[in-house]
Image 1 (tube, rainbow, N blue to C red):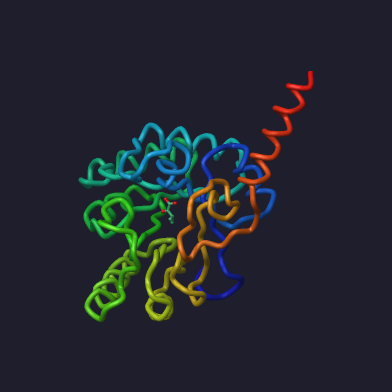
Image 2 (cartoon, protein in one colour):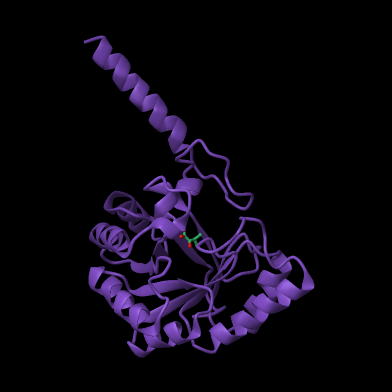
Length: 238
Ligand code: KIV
């Protein structure tokens, strides 16, 4: 999969309607991110979302995009032991996922998922489930070395991809060159094997400040507010 061929496009989706759109646009991989906690449920932290909610979002995405490669995010705490990791990963596969994504390097849990024959996607760099803040990580030599070493360990497990979040471009490039698994960057520069964006940032679906690495490809917020206002006017005019 790695390096040969075209860069990999991945976006987050959480429901059938947008999953259908993403499949029509031939996006390579759909991520049912635990960012659903923020963008779908209005929570402050991704750590607040449950397995039940994530399975519900996964099954909706599967119904909307039955032919796409779907990755479900293991929510905070769901992979805290090898047994719970394997059991919860199986629930995602039953709900329609092709792979599961795990933040960080809980090695025994990662191995337990792989032993079930389930495709694994890693996630290194900024880890929103446990991060104290959302600033770039890997900016000093020590942090960069730690993330690089984690990437090599993760790569030895043969994951189907490694998401790299909010790290310096140079580190994104170095990891990409050193690993066999394709790297998917979100704020990791343009030298990774692919890119992922949160759908609500990409479509600008909210009025909030976007993360520095996000890129806007549409303005759904403005279009939506205008459409609702026009509808209200139309109702008022009977
Ligand atoms: O949950 C999510 O949306 C993610 C992306 C930021 C990669 O993990």
